[in-house]
Length: 136
Image (cartoon, rainbow, N blue to C red; front, side):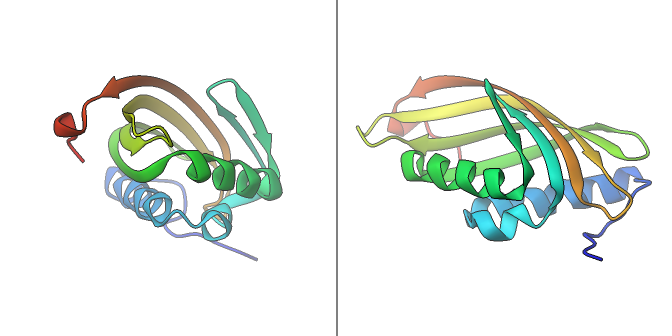
């Protein structure tokens, strides 16, 4: 059985560890590796897209990073319960036209008993920025 430590129930410390692991994984921009942190039947809402399962996660992330170049993400602990974690995040990227963007948002995560994320709901807003205004 595939497990991703730390496992629920989460403490504040283990929730923050889980968040850091997710940030590091997403900054690797490796869709196959990232997908292994999610349950086989994981459900996502990302903006206006609904994604189900690892194959759709891989396809989504591959398409994302074909368009979002020089991507850099920072996640921050917001709250947690036994098997749920809430984070706020921001990330920056440049599009194919050379426009820099900063995206802000919140994510709600739910994990199964093996520490795999089974639900991920993301609300995201984008802000066009000048390259000189980058923070990440």
